Image: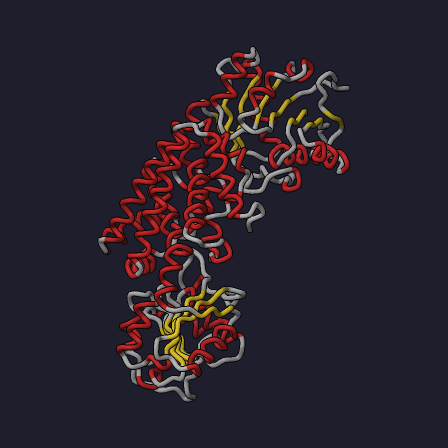
Length: 274
Length: 274
């Protein structure tokens, strides 16, 4: 398996694969990451542009920011571009799947998005159990073969994930709500508190949990937000309108409306929400 | 110590006090709570309207919803109303402090708000270490004596809290931002996802942490929101405007603005934010 990008997701994949006995090749723009991964015995070798592997490569995984992924895919050295499965781990799927098509890699490309990770980033935060029981959305390119999809399913299952297949566009539309919006809300809450002069140390456990995601890697999320901008801007506008209505209900001291709203949200969340 | 209300906060206080060797009297509207607290050996006796304690009561703590607290304070049986310290644990402080003044209890009333707890509620969720290292805002009534404040300080410190003294109005204004807004945002995010047809099970770890508070007790929070409605509605409107601007930056694909906004939020949150 060749893992390109050894951050939180790529690093965790490499660790899990190595722990399972796979031979893992890796690369990262940051030489310190590669050195650490090699020193810790996770990598068997490096991905080099003009090199080839001693053994055939079964799976290539791109674990790089979504705005860089198409260029990385385009620049894959031939011994990797020929692998029977090319997959990725980005949070948006339409653009990378389209790129695989225009590059003629679509028969063997199955996009993936493991719903795992947290606000931390980098090799230092990676851990072999990151994908344990995590949903992994699989978005085959339009021309992907059943064989490629079967391999993607088996691969992501082998690292602990629970594969769920869907179309790339449907994935991006859904994730705008379920993942990108919560991330954006955490950031916006952080900015609102900053504007009000409230430091994070003044928050209780609830406020801290609501602003933890705001500590995520800015460049990675800026790229995701931009790539998924239409559905995300729409979701964001719905949330803003809801907040305005909430402000109004509070200002009007509309107790019964407020109680019914809070009850609706609680019922959705479940009172023993974990 | 007499603890009135044996939910998450009152129950945790009673457990901590009993574990520390204090004699604890308790009461709750729910007889099952009182029975459980007695059975578990936490309570030494009940607070009864026409009763008196075998020993003088040093501290009375109201741990009831903020909308009920003034009536509970007004209805304290004489043997409790005479205690040298009356305190509470509500999330808003102006109204209960004003009530203590109009009831002639202000010399011995020091409001308190321990910044602890989570989305769970009730005796079943209570635990003796709830206040460990938690900030506890102390808001003395205007006529509270230095002796009462000293007692309040020592009392909340004895259960593990870190007392911070401030005026009731300042407390409410600050907490609108640092506590009530994050709570409201979690609820609003839950309602937005509900509207979009997204279930909580579809969320990743980040989305789950952002909607955990939405599972809190509706009546308790409706009362807090209403009691602190002016500062909270203002905070909520600022957040809504920020979200609108965020939607615009995303729609306009303004990459440099977006990156600088996300970086500002990340710097505020700290990248290793716990």
